[in-house]
Image (cartoon, rainbow, N blue to C red; front, side):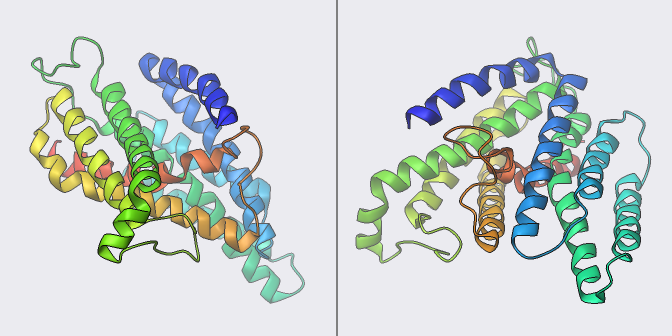
Length: 284
């Protein structure tokens, strides 16, 4: 716990500074996180028994983030990038003498790059975010981009924190009272239903406050909050599945007490697209 606290004290302040600077600072941070995360993800894919083209996989992830950061709206650009990635990975895999190894290389490279490339939705959320109304409590301090990215970060953190605290405190008693103890233990042995419900409640409350702060209907958090929370949990479990397959406890040892970059961004990979879809569908 001491290592985790020290790492949080080291990394959180720069993150907050970048969030408040906004613009290309956010895109730059996401670009760095995507590059490091892709390296870790591709390493795990390789440890799981799938050969990969590491350099190409990292380039795919970075290209998706750069595409999301460009202010010019190119219709279908993300789909085009994925198509190009599939083609290049296939061509790169042609050099494998065993076609089965070539197929595994093709699949592993595309997966690793596109999987971590979904972090680009953090940037897309900021770019798609509407301007804050003058009545919004955050409007004197932040524009739409920075405010919505901040809402995303706090919402995902709320799920992680709520799930940990409630699960740790009430997991056993809740299980004894309801018969609902742990779930998906083959992926993560510590996930409890109490933690799940606690995380969803925390996500809904924090997102409701966030929607109010940006001038959006706070009641919509009753619907969107659980969806974002479930997506955050799914992102965590997806990375757990990858680590289990690779026989690795953490994605790396880059951050003492926290594991690697992928361990820190896994929930955002699934939660960011959900919140972005909400903004694009109901608020723009």
